[in-house]
Length: 452
Picture 1 (cartoon, rainbow, N blue to C red):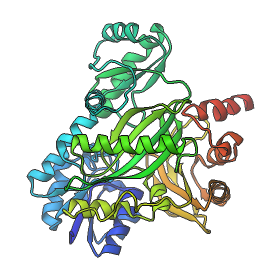
Picture 2 (picture 1 turned 120 degrees about the vertical axis):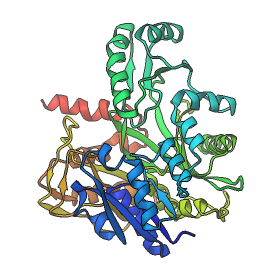
Picture 3 (picture 1 turned 180 degrees about the vertical axis):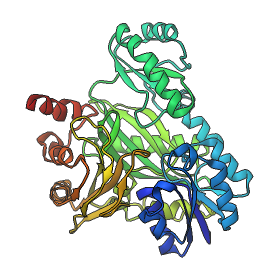
Picture 4 (picture 1 turned 45 degrees about the vertical axis):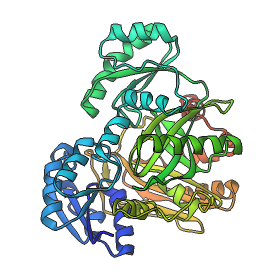
């Protein structure tokens, strides 16, 4: 096992990794921007180094500076967390070339699965069902128009190198496609450095369900059940739960087998997530693979009793998985909600100073956040400020606990999405267990429009 690692991230995920390091006796090294100089994760790390000014391209995306600090501090490995450089193949390669261990899969796998077009081709080769679409990069409007005519509307326009819903849009006609193409291409260039787009057939009433996997360097791959992530705003998840209340045991087994098959086909190592879209008849199709730890990993930890960061570290250190698929039982039900500093009506970020802050406590409640009273939410980074997780023996108990905890979540000084989350977890459609990716548009935003 490692004696010292550097965490190339910030906020709650950095604090989450530090917590596991402390438990395992691993020395943690944090890096931070000038905007985060008094942040909780900086104070909790064993060592911390400023790496630049607040903008991410001058700090948290500065690969050379991060690697320099890792070497000079004596770190043996780098954990990228999620977001930022976590799925950057060039960063992973630079770590390896510098003699550091990158806690994640090999760069070539990150590169292949980071391109939605290449990932689709690879999964088709593996025999995994994929959505009908065009497996070529579209860089000009006329190329997209011709491709759309071949597939037929409605379609999902997506950024090939994208993630987090950025550069993604549903288009129902040629007119909508022409309006959407230039803007989404520009966003893809801005966020991912690649404006390539592609098109997939739209699946009506889609459920977004993903399978968490662990894979070691000895060919062992195990699935850690699935997560339902259908409740999204702007194609970004806001509520996740495990296991999915929608799929049957037969579908579950098929999806777990498909995820293992996919991971083995590409020679995957470390923690990863195979994401699927599932239609109302429970046919499932490969959506993408996230080659990192997910924001929603706590719900999997809650139902399995595992520490996924610890498993990542063990795999990266060359240890063999001591778990078997049969040994990983699912226990109870867990729900996670993401707390954002944003206006719940517009979803626009709401930076500012937190004047009052108190986390809910209670049986089955877990908080993952890195803020406190007096913290400042800056406009430089993602507005997610924390995650609230509730576990219960049953889904009904987990639903009750998450609602009560949200009602006792106290944060003042900024706008948050707490009212939206309370409305979601109280809604009869959510309580029924049948939630699609259109939930927020259909139930929450419609109600907001009626109020106006």
